[in-house]
Image 1: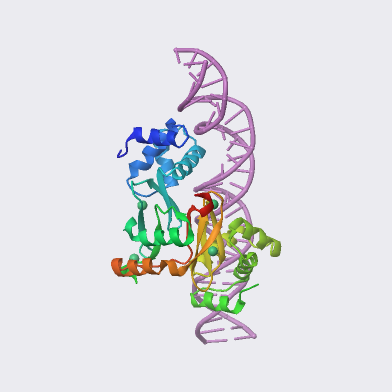
Image 2: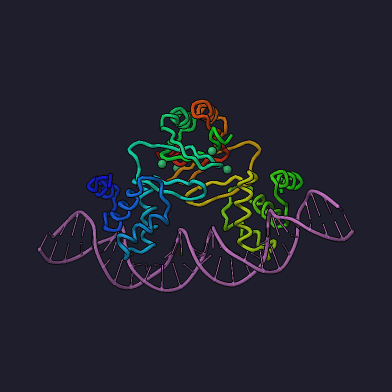
Length: 139
Length: 139
DNA sequence: TTCATTATTGCAACTTTTCGCAATAGCAAA
DNA sequence: TTTGCTATTGCGAAAAGTTGCAATAATGAA
Ligand SMILES: [Mn+2]
Ligand SMILES: [Mn+2]
Ligand SMILES: [Zn+2]
Ligand SMILES: [Zn+2]
């Protein structure tokens, strides 16, 4: 497990909510993949560890943890994926032909975000974007 | 109806597929909203016009039309929405507090797209993005 | 530690979306 | 026009995800 339990308890409480066994187990399950994982994969792993946890709870928890920004989520190849949120945002370039996924640092969005702030008085929350297209090999 | 039937027949055939009554009716249904519409809304309208069309066909058709870029789709407030594709891409700023939706012209992405092309040799296909965040009133 | 409040869970039913497969129909070629 | 190929559809069933509600348990206050 690469995350520190104590931080998550605090961040959940700070957000005005309660830490529960179920939420801890879902966090651990997501973390254990060390990659983007689908709801189905996470649900399966949760049930391996704690079969009594209801599926509705797992779905609700994934949405909840994403809303309070403890998880990142995104749509890749038509599938919703989740991962533990990184300290800073990060993004991906996804080839729709070969499926290759590359990382794109947050820095690339700095100018766009600044422009949206100043010209549109809108505060964008861009923490995990998946950009589809064609990689060098597939163009 | 604001679209020209003949164009769609041609574009579907050019993409190596067949135009069918079902696809025409789904296109008409999506068009009739003149706004972002959910799958449920589109399915309902299709059934008002042609009750015999199967729901699986409508879902399959929405995916298909999106894949060949005749429709735009996106996730707004957790819901997948569809609309007739505009000649040029367009994007949205969506306030997560009040739900207000503003338009964002494609021009804003020009620099980002250029950077991704030159620095990452990746050809991004950004035709309809929904950026969530906070509008001026809600910050 | 005990209690009171109420957020969260489990449950079961429900809605939404997907799937495999046989029947149908688009369309290119004869 | 007719024919043949096969992409597309309808169907029924399954899978995936959501919901309302009563029971449970996390938290702060006593
Ligand atoms: Mn990621
Ligand atoms: Mn739009
Ligand atoms: Zn590729
Ligand atoms: Zn707002």
